Image (cartoon, rainbow, N blue to C red):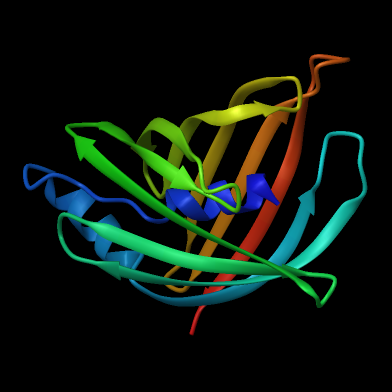
Amino acid sequence: MRPLLIATLLSLSCLSANANAADEDFLNSLAGDWDGGGMVLTKIGGTKVNVSCNLKSNASASAVSMNGSCRALAIVTRTFSANVKAAGQRYTGNYTGPSGQPSMLVGSRKGDILNFNVTWARITNGDRKANLMIEKLGQNGLRLQTVDRDPASGRSVVTSRIELQRQ
């Protein structure tokens, strides 16, 4: 569930006051209550688990904060939060998932997509690196996706993919 939670983390972005108008508009567009679902791999090569998620996002022209939770198998719930700041075109921050340990995020925005390099707080799928993408889908949709590298084959594997709708 860590990849899913990290994807949600990206949605919790905070930007500096010098962010340009496009960044400000983008951040404001992330505000609201979001619900949806998707899949998460517990580990590369493992079984896909269907999840339902919700998150609350507060935003202004210079900041976004999100807190959310995802439920799997109708009985397991995990919470997460994220904080990201922008300096020019660079976004940095952290994501805190079920372990309670913050993972680092560094990335940038291109159009309606925030792309982050993730450094996990601990080894996950053979290393501490992954990629997280938050994509705005129209006015009322978000896609959160985490991609990791399979240590055995070196191939990229989607480890979480969540689609949310504004409520």
